[in-house]
Length: 501
Image (cartoon, rainbow, N blue to C red; front, side, top):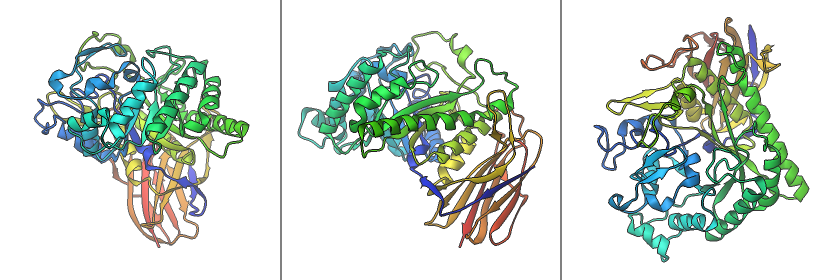
């Protein structure tokens, strides 16, 4: 089987916003307690943060982290997580039915995110709270000094403002599971008034309004139109959430259909872009609303097990999906899809980062292990920088149960003109055949192949609990001045980095 990519450095989709490689931490399960934060662990630093987790997160090159939720957000009092830990209240987390000690709060998150080289994407509670609490939190975080709240931040150990740039106006507010669920009109008016108040406190911030929590919700579409109609001039992004796996009618042996779900993601993004632009046209606005895909991942393995967890624990084992090789292939393809839409998707958050549907797992009494999905994410977040190029691709397609035209070769190139590097991500979705991959670099002259790697050779259902998965050298590669040829194994994730003159 053959596949071809023509790389044209002048045919640019967009400059890639590095925030598209963001992630997400929520006070849920063991994401924080025995994940990020475990003072009694042998690797814990002076702040109680696990250094082995910090090192693993740094390898992912995550530039932005959304916090504190998630469903947890919609019942959270941010004031509970500031001040001396001995004075912080222990409360019921009624979103996830856990006990929240508040040992880890705003200041801890800010310290930790700095240690992993990330900036915060902070969220405000519009479920049980509203305008005043959101404006207060922003003042506490961003106002320099001289007011009660800014001086309280200084008293609590942060003399300089946190200067948080990006803020989410609630979470999944049309979800029946959400504490403080709202209809579209109710949320839209609250979000707009909250946005107005927050931008009066700090007009440099960017705000993300909630889109529908799922395109499968009956509210989808009408919700987006109503929210945008009310909030258009006071927000900067609209959020999208989408998870993938074997659901409903899916047969767990339908690998061809699972690997075609990037088609669904592409259609979802383009549909929401069309809604944003329709409202722009209706309002005759010069402003363009871009997208924050602030929850996405594979999520289905843990659903049955979670129903058996006893409520009212601190850091219970919840949503601890153990990912396999086919999940990694899907995550790689979803990342390529985000890059293909980088002209409008400016923020994205892999949900989540540690222990909870996460690429990084911890043992409370031991070390860290990396899931299969860690590897494609690590490569794209590290090397998928610069400009995303329009993928001019020739490849065969297949039909699965849900999707009519799934490309066997899923690929995209990025071009960094500062260091003259072309990076190509390519996935062969064929389960049986090697793909003869030819790349034409148009008017670019190849200086050298810096690196060629593959992630392949594993059974689709194999996980990485034993730590044996690794990225290996792709050896079947040759090149001339402007062309590269490579053989891509069946079911493989591949990357080529090329220095050009």
